[in-house]
Image (cartoon, rainbow, N blue to C red; front, side, top):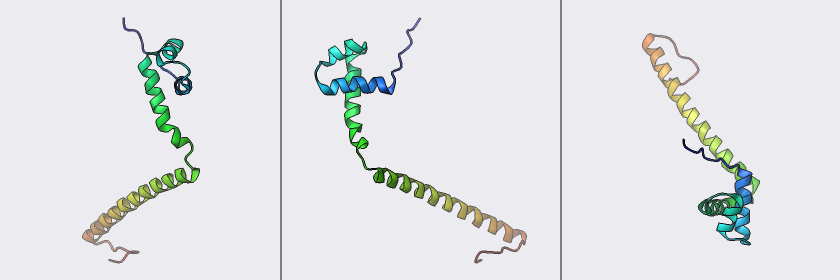
Length: 104
């Protein structure tokens, strides 16, 4: 019977990575203390160091990214709706139904 993998919480990973960043203990010592593989310690340390700059990123920058993403979604939706309206106008003209509200 296979042993089920342990799932570690984000808080646990952060605690382990912080210990590794402090550098007071070796990776092997930290791994033994937390009962995990030394490779996991180094991976979590690397990941934490890569994402630390995001923590100090200004809130305006995050809002700008969200605004830009929202703007792209809206442009996409406008394009889709324009195509649908054009299709329906064409079908209405084919069926002889008068089309109002847009320049034809």
